[in-house]
Amino acid sequence: IMAYKIIENFLDKKLFDEFQGILMSTKMYWFFEPTMIKKDGNKFYLSHKIYDLTPISTLYDPYVKAIFDKLNCKAPIVARANLYVHRHKKITSSPHIDTGWKNHKTAILYINTNNGYTAFGKKKIKSKANRMLIFDSGTKHYAASQTDKDRRILININYDLLFFFFFLAALLALATCLLLTSLSATNVTSSTT
Image (cartoon, rainbow, N blue to C red; front, side):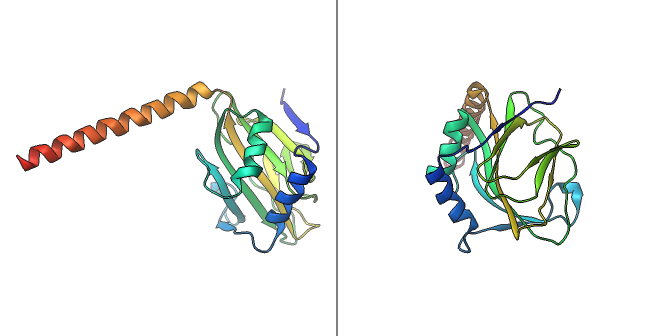
């Protein structure tokens, strides 16, 4: 049984309207992505990465941080805004999973209302402004672009429910850095004597 959750009016209206205004503005920076899914070929879209294990965009606080807080997200992995431009026909990605890891979730916040959608097989979840869709990241799904508006914008988030997993990963990374620093210092000392 495929499970997902939809929450209407996910963000506070004032915060959502402000966030939507920024994302829909002509001053927003977008970056070209050549394919929706690697095997899809010429199905490009634009993106703006906001979070990648750490905040990397000014859009993080207060907007994406508020989303993480409301999701009770203990270990965010990645968050990005995606923009699909009108291409005069419906463009769909190949069915895919975001991650196959246990306890990982995908959350999609739709920024504008349009006839694009996220689909699980034949079940279509329409893009509706301030609608949040949450599902297990291992669930096969696909995206469909819009034909009624000039663009479709959404926030795509992958996160882990278990903070412990990321705590261990961070600890391992720290230990590796300390070991490399120690080895580097040893090499410098050896070469100068």
